[in-house]
Amino acid sequence: MMETEVKLTKLASCAGCGAKMGAGTLAKMLEGFKTHTDPRLIVGYDKSDDASVFVLDEHTALIQTTDFFPPIVDDPYLYGKIAATNALSDVYAMGGEPKLALNILCAAEGMAEETIREVLRGGYDAAYEAGAIITGGHTIRGAEPIYGLAVSGFVHPEKVLTNSNAKPGDVLILTKPLGVGILTTGAKADMVEQEVMDRIYAQMATLNKAARDIMVQYEVHSCTDVTGFALMGHSYEMAQGSGCTIHIQVDKVPYHAEALELASMGLVPAGAYRNREYAQAGVAVRGKISRAMEDILYDPQTSGGLLFALPEQEAEACLEAGIPYAFAEQERWNRDPFDCLKDAMDWLREEIHQAQT
Image 1: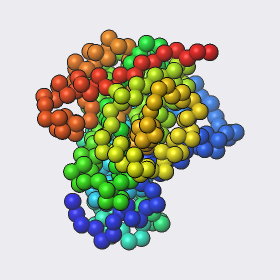
Image 2: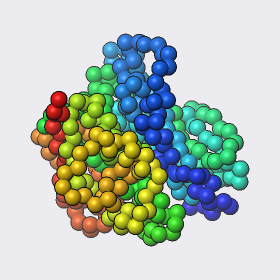
Image 3: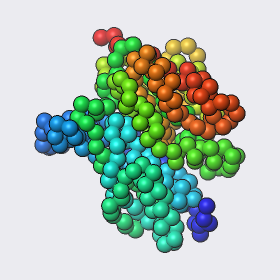
Image 4: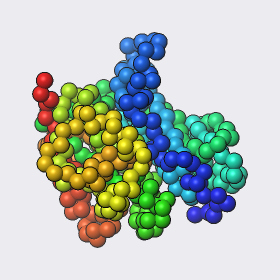
């Protein structure tokens, strides 16, 4: 990691996907706008999905998305890589493969040219790993640093995955544990050990490509990635779009234990409160769940994992194929990775039932 003259996180008022505007607020702001319709646009912003999808021909559909945010780490290279990884994830969540990307960068006063170059280098490395090409972009000066990508990808029109097609009886698989927002908030106050943060940074910088490549080989009904709206917000959108109720067994949700400790102390990012405000009207709690555990469920994730719904039998086969989950946990457990994987996926099952209407 290179030394920087100014800590990047000190230049921003909020960090990562925690900077995301609340879903409820955004929906209200978009109401009533004039817009064209086109039958080839099979996924638009009205679906609250991860990206738009436009059919080009019978074999090809174009996926378009954009994502950017303020620094979540001080190391500029890592910041660039995490931000690009997060942007690329939306294409994977639609079942597609990213192919082209454009840089979106705002350089704050106080950022040296070498620092800016390192942010861009991190983005280029993430895109290269994904097999995508950064073809240009737009760079400005502003009050706070911002970086991300506008990404284009492709998918077969009949293989598009949306967040609104989960079926009764499906189970869910989540490919990364929760708690990122809480831990990065704690890190700002020097309340998290560096070893823990190194694990979190590595998780955020890991593409969802491997998960996508295995996932698309199975009968997946619905998919999204868990980012700024947290597990509860993204699950809520999936439930609404699918006309289903999602039952989440809290004791089987994967999370970083250190995040629960911080949440118990009240160290929770502002985005978690926005997510709670947005989703809690559609959430019914049964049994006793601590406030700290609820905070984990509403915690905004940066570059989070894929959350996808599929029949239970297909889920078993998907696990056997080695669908990845947060690799850091494999290292912590010091056991055979496949055994760890099986245990982790046992945690990640969440039964979906049809909503009572």
